[in-house]
Length: 84
Image 1: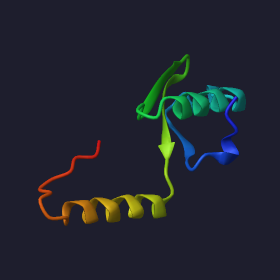
Image 2 (image 1 turned 90 degrees about the horizontal axis):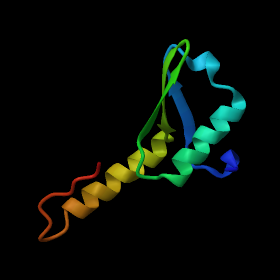
Image 3 (image 1 turned 180 degrees about the vertical axis):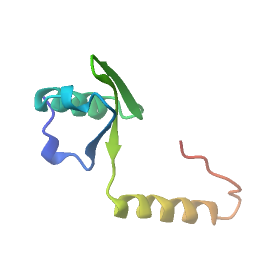
């Protein structure tokens, strides 16, 4: 299983069925997101409603991403960069 203490992000869960997501299921969802880096969200349907699960990145990490994008687009010959 994934050691969630080594992840650079936290699990973010939103939705009315959130109380159905046990710590064990949270660990499994984190492992899925770790194994599938291109997956942005996982949608879980429970008997209490949906839960949308995603990664929650620290704000400093996103600031670094923005800075890198700015540096790339400022380079000669680069006119655009698209980051999903």
